[in-house]
Length: 347
Image 1 (spheres, rainbow, N blue to C red):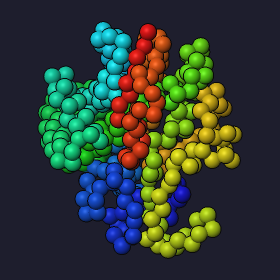
Image 2 (image 1 turned 90 degrees about the horizontal axis):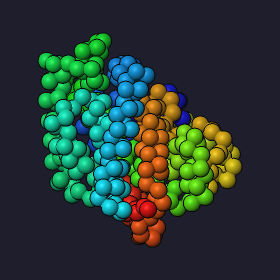
Image 3 (image 1 turned 60 degrees about the vertical axis):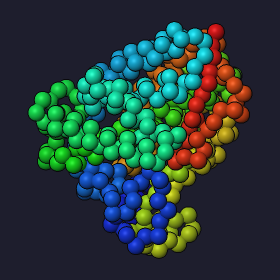
């Protein structure tokens, strides 16, 4: 269905659809100029192509070394403070936030404020008023950043978008695309880091296997992505014409929501799908979507998870939960599954 042209991501164009609108999607009438994930080709193709050209192998390799530096810096700060920490604010949140700063070219002096606004704007513990205010400040920040990149470009993704896109992108499109990168890249990766650590600590035999063979990390990341499937209420699509799907007749305008966790635990594709098995043979999953809307930043997300989890296990011997597992507050009420906090300790 995700690659079926009879289903549309553009709900603005199908206003009569009676839809379930996931919380992360913009309300009808409020789709941003650069929010191409809610568009269809050819509009989607043009905007996505502009961004695809900035996710180069060279840039990802450059970021990889910075991801490691940022990860090590935060782990060492935890170690210096003792043998116990809440892994979410100490590590899982700041790592992807600072990586996004590197990607977009946010000045070092602005990063603390940027990270603070990002955390408040995306945190489930913030009030709606706090989130709205923080996101408004982020939008204004991004507009200023776009303006700065126009007058003083650097070797970063946003400068590339500003100066290399053909045809050129408007400031509104650039601002919205930058905010989309921020939200998609920060929220999902931060929750995957926290939840992956929690899952490993709850499966000591799998954790021991990964410690014994660090070369297993790439496979471990893919299995954790499949097993956790943190987008609980998957993407939705609107039928543009009458369609029969799975034996069900759908009228034009019907909305279909993809249950990603169920897809990623389909026993027809994965033996014993409810088990976490880091040695499982790789089979394509839907953690990053499929088709023309497949996640652009999946390579970066894999880098952050591989390095983040690898450095945690290497530098925090005896890493374990500091509270019983049932006391860890999970984000099961949110669109993106995760943990609100993760108290851990180490030797």
